Length: 226
Image 1 (spheres, rainbow, N blue to C red):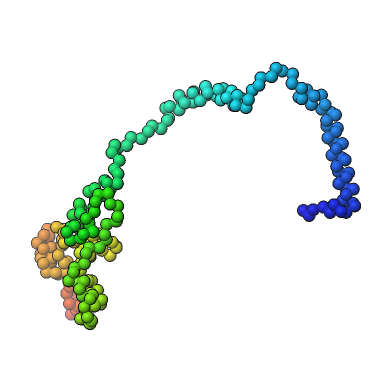
Image 2 (image 1 turned 90 degrees about the vertical axis):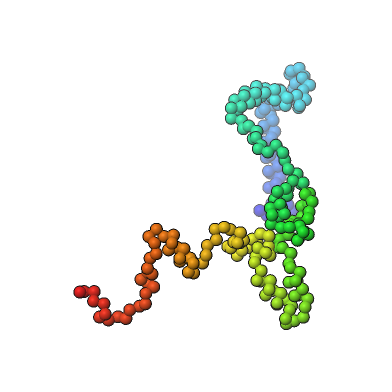
């Protein structure tokens, strides 16, 4: 809403009339309620000299019985303090106890000097195993027999479990440390596996399935109607 132009004579007359109307209304209200105003302004009781804190304390004392009653009733539904299983809370010196690469048996401090750490050392453990020194020398020899390309080619022939302490990517999950398992199976497409399957079968050796046979030429060679 735009502001009124107080320099306009018509606006000045309008404002004066409103001010006078407001004064008359207030004087009429005061004259109508004069007795109530006089009674409220006169102190007819003895002074108590109460402070604001005394009034607040009086209200608090009046609510104490309710608090006590509710506390007793809520005792049936009050949540108890949970019991902790471990009374001993491990500190910094116990964070790596029993879970380090050396204690698990995946690394040897003699081969990797980075694994030699005190118990209170919180630096992360190495991700990759140390590279063979003979393989590292390939980088510093002349090309094309040696160099970076030949180093990467020979490095790719190393098994993932010989390069990393743990399976760092999803590609390494399948076949990770497969040689350590006692449940290894031979190839399912070799002779040894077919022989083992035939011997372990309940019905003994079986002939080759029909789709192993050579295809027959179409014609009257098969007389199925006779």
